[in-house]
Image (cartoon, rainbow, N blue to C red; front, side):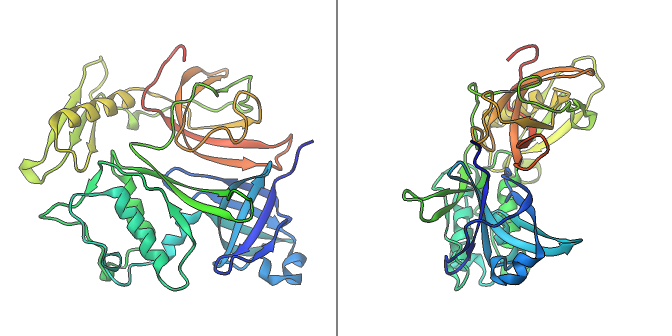
Amino acid sequence: MVIPDRVLTQHALTGEWLTLALPLTDLEYGDELNGPGSLSGSLAPRLLSQNPTLLDPGTTLIYVEAAGQLRWGGVVWDVRAQGDTLAVEAAGWSSYLERRFDVDGQFGGRGPYSYTDRCQVIRDVWTYAQSITDGNLDVQVDPTTSTSLVGTTAERYESNWWDSKSLGSQVDDLVSAEASPDYTCTVAWNTDKTAPVRRVRLGWPRLGRRRTDISFASGANIIDSPPVILAGDEYAQVVIGMGEGDGSAKRRQISAVRNGRLRLEHAASFPGIKANDTLAALAAAERTRRQNLGSVDQITIRDTPSAPFGSWEVGDDVPTRVHNPWVDYVGWRRITGWTMQPGADGGPRAVINLKPADSYQYGGV
């Protein structure tokens, strides 16, 4: 017997359960790498008119439970009429930081920063946001540490109240550079399944792991015919790696090969990297990645033993085989996001967003 996904809602400040079985239809939800992830669905207007507190945008938390486990959680941001239904949209925990600002400066005195771990700054952002009255989502941020640093003695990393930059935008900056930590938003029941544990997972040097126990493959669990994209604007056989320093003192290493193709270059920034050997290795890895033209960016799969729903996580590298009339593709792809569609025609399915993994194999994995 297949147990349908259950949608629950909760008041963000009091923790009061508003409903333990919200009848959303057209439900879609999923996680995202370095982003909040999203949820959408539809609700009959009469249900909300009878109990308007079920979904109060901006102060209602929403969760999806599947097979007894919380699979997704976030904040309801938008409820609006669309024809004869109400469209509901929500986003994961980090979306809350887009609605918060550093009104005190330096995250309440925790900054400015010199040669500081980016992971620590991200934790400080959350600590500051949740320290202010009515601002506590009770989100726990992983204690992960990294060697990816921000700020120098001469140029400190600062957060000034007059910049009017959202806390979410500042976290985006901290994870957007090359060789920076990853994050994703998750949720799970506590040990006695009475309360959700809201969490931001930090990964260094990255989230996820190389998976040899699951796979995505045409004829096994992939149900569409995804195109293999040959993107010349992403290709480069010359990578210019830029590290620590300013002006002519900036560290630079170039990784280049000749391969009979028109020379294409890419400049990659590796903030905080001072050692030339480390910088050279990073540039070479980026060149290797960019020399592969074949790209499978999205697949749709069914729940099968090859990759059971819930078995993968954002950041995982998964062996992927795509066979269609146009191409045979075999390689490692990294999961950057996923969207569950439990009510899809033909049964539940998941749309998986992918990007090139750190290494590749063609002709077999």
